[in-house]
Length: 150
Image (cartoon, rainbow, N blue to C red; front, top):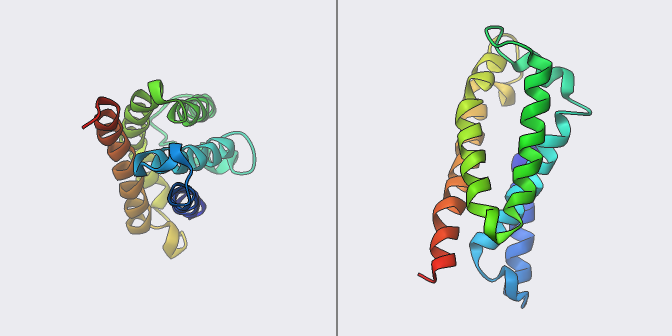
């Protein structure tokens, strides 16, 4: 739930800053990029501290080297979070994050199995994943249009 709260809160604050006169934040896509960057920085950090063991346990058993996979995805999330903040790399970062959200969805399905609290069950996990994917795709599509001046 923390990633969703981070995405919404940071995006909202950046939209407010844009409305109050921060020129670079006047476009909603810029606020979304900032919100996503904050969210993926948060989730990337969990790959290394705090929740690492839980994330390793989420990797389906059919995949090799779960610890390495968690490390690599954490590095990719952090790199893409930084890439979202630079206009020239924002679309590429959004595309990579979109692909990662789709590819990593089976880990959410695997993690939702068994005895988990309601907020960690497949329905809420899928809804949050859909919000994250919609946001990365929005940045991918809209940032390109904004850069072209349309």
